[in-house]
Length: 72
Image 1 (tube, rainbow, N blue to C red):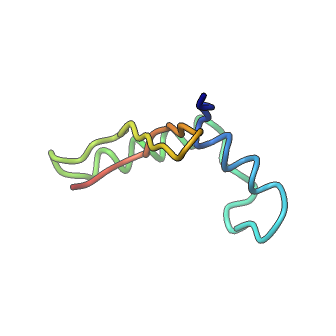
Image 2: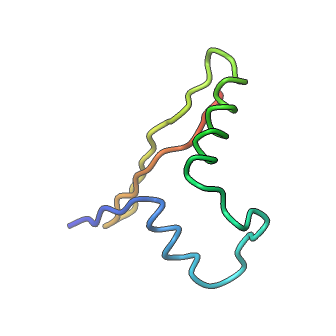
């Protein structure tokens, strides 16, 4: 039996305590984040992949998510 978890949920769960990076607080709004992401996409070359699905496994655990940008 394997459990499936989104990488974001795993990170949110594990980052509840400890040394968090607070350089970007307050966090941008969703609209600001989307606009910033589009600016980055527009500046990249033709080979740039805006959203890349990723997954990995560990015994009993399947982790999945996406990277906001990949430039091979």
